Image 1 (spheres, rainbow, N blue to C red):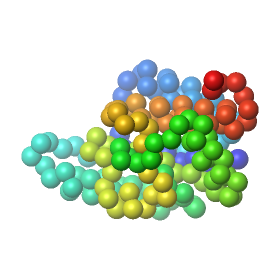
Image 2: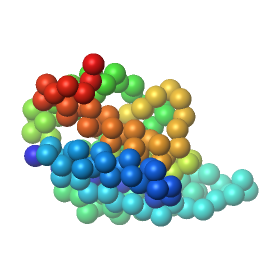
Image 3: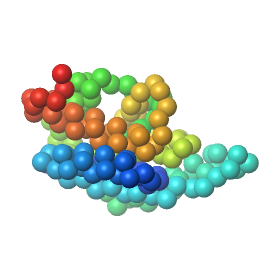
Length: 159
């Protein structure tokens, strides 16, 4: 069984995002054990140094990563690799075929991820060339992981 950790800065504030996440987590239960590590994002203003904020958040992410055994880190990043849904499913299938069964996805806060976290990533993943809130990205990621599972098991969901 696949083990997925999601390290995410910030929480899902609106009930509709919480409900959407709960639905995909329920759908993923047959294929994956999922743990969400929800970290507090740093507050900031326009006057703050962005790199300092990202560094503080990186320290929190690293502390969470220290608790995850055999983490295969996949960082969501706007400059990451774009996959079609079918290619993303193939990517997950390739990893599991290589006995990589512990996937750790990381979603940063509004400022993105610090370079130190991006360097740790085995894969930098972009969900789109468009920009989404990290709440949207979180739900979209679950949907794409679920879609990948459906594709990889030959079930009707992706047409």
